[in-house]
Image 1 (tube, rainbow, N blue to C red):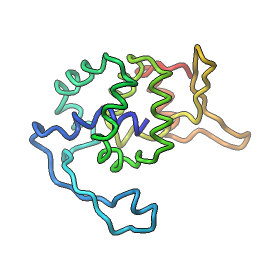
Image 2: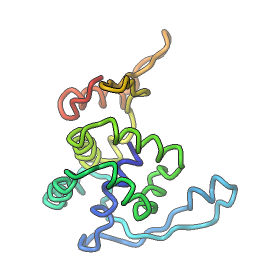
Image 3: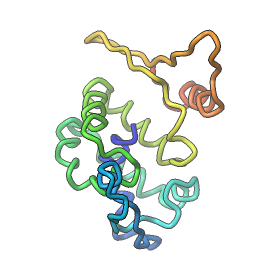
Length: 174
């Protein structure tokens, strides 16, 4: 879901019309994974990115942006993949296998479900990016998400929060 967020939301998050954009630097994730930890990526991100305040402040822009996402989402995913690379790097959603999984999710989920996921995440990204279910079960026509636990395992607080948010906002089969 981090990759889906990065691909579909980069043009909103990094929009030059946002007066709170600032230049930030972070370690290049690919370089870090290749044991070259000192390489940096510089980009512009809002000072309040990921907070509930960002969502409140940018509400109209978010509504307009999500309204644009009614076209062929798999094609748009491929079209926006390259320009979203910096935001995806920032979110640790840069690996090829993560992108491939995200592309498959977009093909399974309806456009409306993708928009609900994006709306949920942009509402407070740093508070909502964890706790997602472990598995998507898909049989070619229908799907559901599942959280897998052993007999000694318990739900974490972020998982409980996701389950509650799913019941009220996301409404994904779970």
